Image (cartoon, rainbow, N blue to C red; front, side):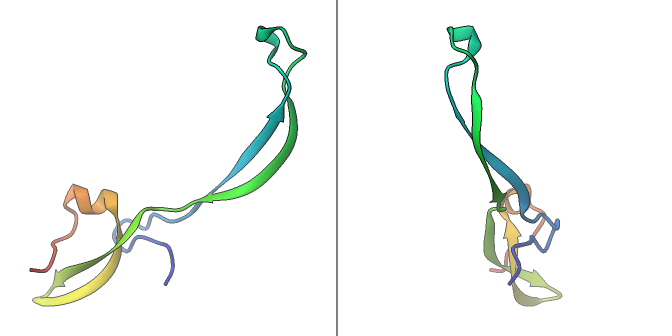
Length: 76
């Protein structure tokens, strides 16, 4: 199962964390120095939901923003 919303197509987004040390110049220091940069991923908040399609129930993975916006019709 991929980590992609089946309604809007929202998926993982790449980012990075930046480690810094030192005191900021405006606080009287010599400035912040970067000591490490590592990659990270921001994953969408996916939930497994039963929906109704053509009178039949189907299980999909939808993000919570699509669920709260009412883009899907939940099965009873």
